[in-house]
Amino acid sequence: MIDIRPFASLGHADHGWLDARHHFSFADYYDPARMGWGAIRVWNDDRIAARSGFPPHPHRDMEIVTYVRSGAITHEDSLGNKGRTGAGDVQVMSAGTGVTHSDFNLEDEETTLFQIWIEADQRGIAPGWGAMPFPQKDRDDSFQLLASGQADDGALGSGPIDLRGAI
Image 1 (cartoon, rainbow, N blue to C red):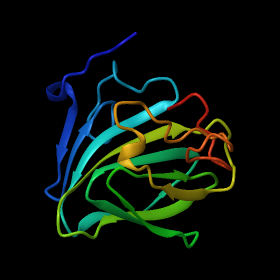
Image 2 (tube, rainbow, N blue to C red; image 1 turned 90 degrees about the vertical axis):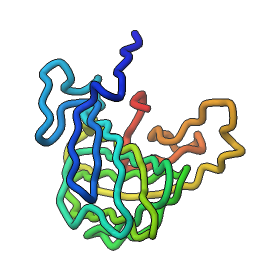
Image 3 (spheres, helix red, strand yellow; image 1 turned 90 degrees about the horizontal axis):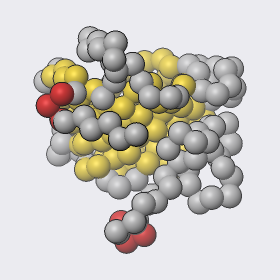
Image 4 (cartoon, rainbow, N blue to C red; image 1 turned 30 degrees about the horizontal axis):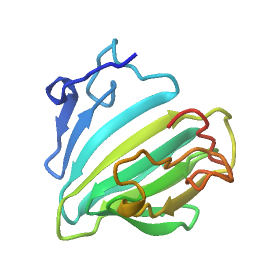
């Protein structure tokens, strides 16, 4: 079943540095008819102003996929992971038993991204993070698997991150 959600019908929050659209109930946006879809709990369409971002904050037992549409995001976490994910690329974080992280737009331009939170199949697994480039030429006029949880499919998300059937 296809559920068409016009952009204007999405939840909205404008924090100055962050202009977010929420496909499902999130933060101050609550719609009991839009609590998620299967294991997908959050799908946000974010615009992050230059030189700003999300300060350190904790998560646990959630798989978080970030697809950067324009600009770049720089991730840093309590496990010592740090990396920059640019436009067209994906980062995946498995919060597992708990991790504190930050994501900042350190660029001189706005960054746009989709952030997708998926409820973990298993609770209490080891946390992890990874990023992977997905060259535009490899996905022109076709779908490309970005994250899956399978070790041999060329996508991001093998190891502790279990996204089978979610993306």
